[in-house]
Length: 430
Image (cartoon, rainbow, N blue to C red; front, side, top):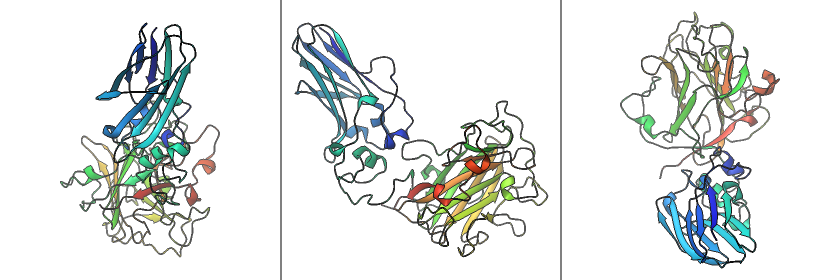
């Protein structure tokens, strides 16, 4: 008889890894097989499930423990592929168990799957999908802190220490640390390679896209459509942000890719023009009102105005620089966005090979109560104005995308409720 088991590698959204590793759909073609001949000789080929190939895990330390009917199958590695042989009696029940372990520095159980077949008297196929694996429960929580081993590996905490991360919530992003400095000019090519060291993705390996559509005044924009993105790095004193906005040639989000008109000054509010919004809750109070301590909302428009000239905005402009605190920031939160020792920024209407809007922003961490090694509230949003009038669209990194029939007051709410910010953490220096 021939016994074949398939382990199908599925491409699931990486954010599912922390919250759920189940409910994934099947894919076609056997990535892993166990061939059993009529004499019971068995040849096994095994590949790890997709969720174990994320960058948070060191692939070289992953190893499968495979048993058939309770007998261990010796497996050897050849790249990603693991192979082994054993014998399965004819007309016997078959129980296949696969445990994926992290073997260094000590053994750590990450995922298990189990498949059975009764009274096997013919060639059969057993399939193991990613959705068949279990990753939650006491067996997968080495330090009994109610956070699974794989979740701790993803967020870079110690799965053997119940005090790590303690009571801190799981951050979505961990920002790299570097002592290098950069010129804040709205471009990334300052000769220091500073931005090569920055964080461009979350803990699940997903790019930090600002592509959740939360305001659409024209009905012409496509959720997840723009190639807007942010990155971050810190040096213990400043948190420095890089934000890519819209293309200057096309808006990149409407179905037809309409040409962008001059993005002039609407003469109303900053959020009505092309502008960047930064939200910070340093002590992670997560209140439903901006507190009197450190909840902050900053808005940086693209152009200086006041006549709507297409001249990039920057913090060292003597008379015409423009930056603003959000209207719900409490006046008792003493923070001067015009103080260049606290906020240094430059917006670039970059041309050439990279014809797009770019912001560089350097924020004083002490003044904003931004901690190192602790989770805090954070959000990036971009207002888009393509015709020089009022705002046409707004995009968010963390705030969820709008759904059909929702009003702006239902989707554009972070400026009112700081509890809606995402959560990030700055890595310590070694």
